[in-house]
Image (cartoon, rainbow, N blue to C red):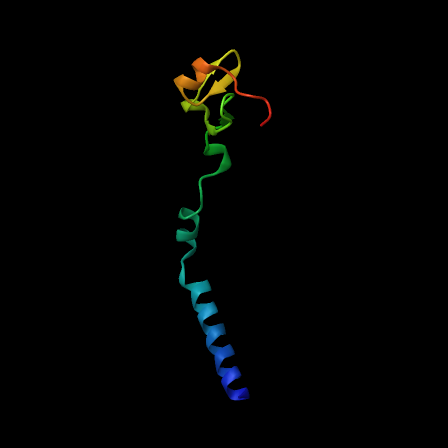
Length: 80
């Protein structure tokens, strides 16, 4: 039984080392998510509360809306 646990631990350690060192350093940098500064700012729809990128939102009197229909309906209830 002790031999079996030893071999399982040895194989698990070998797999862990192989996965850790198989990927080159250059590919790790290309797989990372875009930096936070590159992301567009998000705004909240004044009617339904959904968040969307500011460049896709419609604004009226310093309030943002997700669609023309919500812009025409105006702000929603304030219980959100």
